[in-house]
Length: 146
Figure 1 (cartoon, one colour):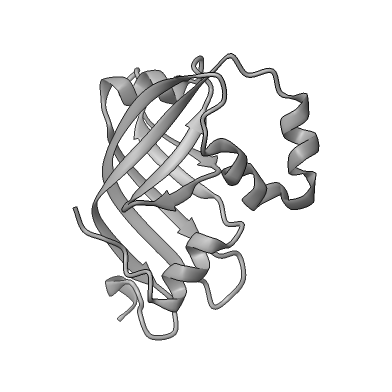
Figure 2 (cartoon, helix red, strand yellow):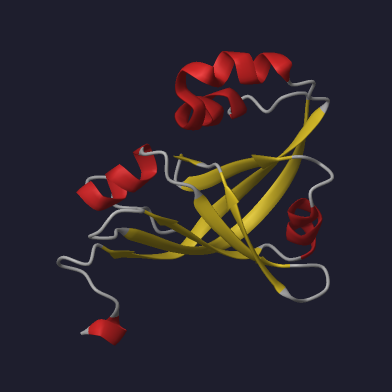
């Protein structure tokens, strides 16, 4: 499994910032889907948490091939593109990594948000990386723009 270059400043900023991942997968009807989702990168893979009734959980159980983009919203745009294989696992109660993921996006509002949740079960989506590319639109451009 290829590791992301965590010492690359573009990768480090995208993984540490409040950027959403955009998860692309194949729905149960065979049509493509893309959904924004909170994520965390740890131990060489991308982790996302969702509910057990989420369409993406059922679809990923049937076909784990995914692509993700994590990108900045300000120019010069920075983009991390990832392809990988997703595995899902149901977790009783709240997934242990979920509070940390929430804290990244909600900051001081995390405790209030988590305090109102009544979670019986969650689904962990863990993406093992197959390949990745970085574009920073300063030194690294998509081939189509060269």
